[in-house]
Length: 79
Image 1 (cartoon, rainbow, N blue to C red):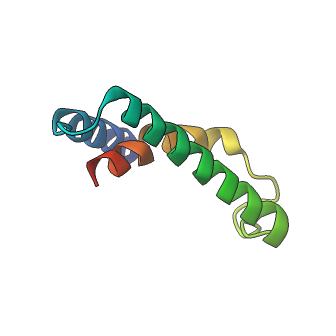
Image 2: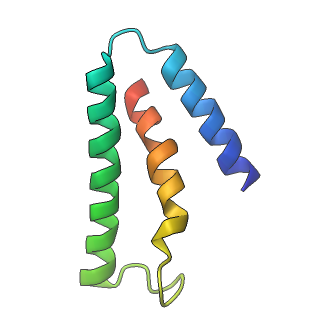
């Protein structure tokens, strides 16, 4: 958990400090589409292929929301 918190802080700082090319509208689009595609992809894999059966029987998606919303989109902004 400490690693996740440090990664969130680090990636958000680097992404927002080094961002010189993207407008606020583009940043909102990146955040929105990255989050929605990640959640849709994981939901599809879980429901159709039962791809996450080896973790638990019931996936608690609320725990993963923090990763999808604050860790992955800033990484996409950097690249």
